[in-house]
Image 1: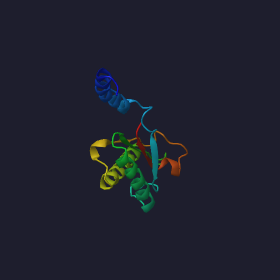
Image 2: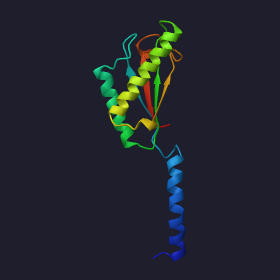
Image 3: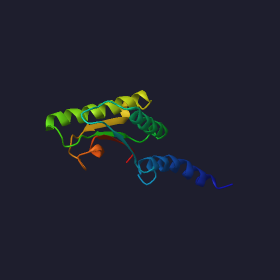
Image 4: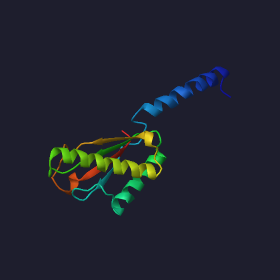
Length: 134
């Protein structure tokens, strides 16, 4: 049996090691991304979108210490104000579905980015990215 002082030292250091592990990014899994795509001018969730959100929600429920970030985007068509409103509606729809699927609302942060991250002015831009962790 180890000396009593070694056991005491281990008992005192264990909570410190556990708390450090929880805040070090190398200890946690890498961020997971789930893209959800939309039809032009719409914030309605398709069945495919709901399935992707369910997978993201299942992951988030297993990794409760990781934040969930929802970023909404639009393509370049339309005016800036309409795109800002649409990206917010898309992000909100995804956020609400995540909550419906069991993710605590307090863990979710959502942003409306409009066309600020437009890639191709096409389907890839009409999306919401769900990032868990990181």
